[in-house]
Amino acid sequence: MMSPQVEAKEDRETGSSRWRVLLLLALAELLGMSLWFSASAIVPALKLEWHLSESAADWLTLAVQLGFVAGTLLSALFNLPDIINSRHLFTVSAICGAIVNGAFALLAHDATTGIILRFLTGMFLAGVYPPGMKIMATWFRRGRGFALGVLVGALTLGKASPYLVNAIGSSAWRVNVAVVSVLAAAGGLIVLLFIRDGPFALPSARFDWRQVTRIFENRGVRLANFGYFGHMWELYAMWTWMPVMIRASLSARGSAPTLAEAASFLVIGAGAAGCVVGGLLADRVGRTLVTSWAMIVSGSCSVIIGLLFELNPLLLLTVATIWGASVVADSAQFSTCVTELGDPQYMGTALTLQTCLGFLLTMVSIELIPRAVNVVGWRYAFAILAIGPIFGVASMLRLRALPEAMKIAQGKR
Image 1: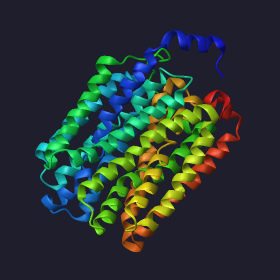
Image 2: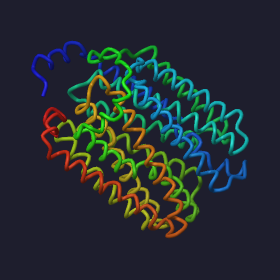
Image 3: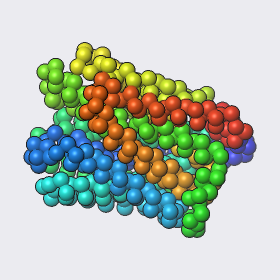
């Protein structure tokens, strides 16, 4: 736990500045991460224009995940978030991602080119998400769970934003993708021009390849990562395929396509509120409890949601929105645990490796859902995602029982 002197230092040196940084960095993260689903959101249009097979359409989504995994792996191996200023890494990555995404809008005319550009987009996003978390952690010690919850909530809205752009924007998909690229570049410039490192930032670390293995020698960090892996098994498969299921269900009932796009934005975007509420609760009642309950709720929704396919749209969207809020409500708290339990000098490396392995796992669950749909239909396909929350809850309750847990949330575990 922090001494009164350290708490007084935090209040004195940050003051209102940290709240300004919280808002600006959240906005930058929202804009930067809007690149993630910019192609997934236009798959129906691409299928018609490019005559895409189902496999090629799936790879447009998986390419981003694979690029992100490759980018985070390289970043972690070379300790980039700890030896390069995180603000500069964020800015360069967001702008480069925007350029590549803009190339998709202007130059992509077939699946092969599109998949390559989406892979590169994912690689650059590896320099947006983890560095953003590290920047935020340098401004907050008390209330860190809330601060990172706001950041991940903004990220969630960013990933949902292409569906909103589709619903209210141009009927030409290239225009919509270009708009998202401009937003991402603006996010990078916000960090460069208006955000500085917090008072708890440490000097740049030296390159140490052993940090990758040392992270897993720390028992508390290891269990927090296991909880994160269970959470990630469910999260991106839900985000990727829930809009597809909503389109199919509403289409079967004769609803307008724009309703499905708006509903998809609502369902994914609900996670923003979940992240903020989860962060507030985690700082007050404990991270291990909040993450466990969030996974219990989201895992239950994964089993229930398919039973509502092609039934009452209002009931389907209600459960889907609850799932959207709970499935990501715990996300920031796993990362917060890593910042509290790990070596602060190599915080960026630990966060980057955590996201790398978590996103690598998502590629398996994302690929499993359409295969399950082919076998059992939408009614039961999402149920396989409940495996992740079960594993995640067991890991976090194990962490709660350890002495190391007293370092979490000033002893609230």
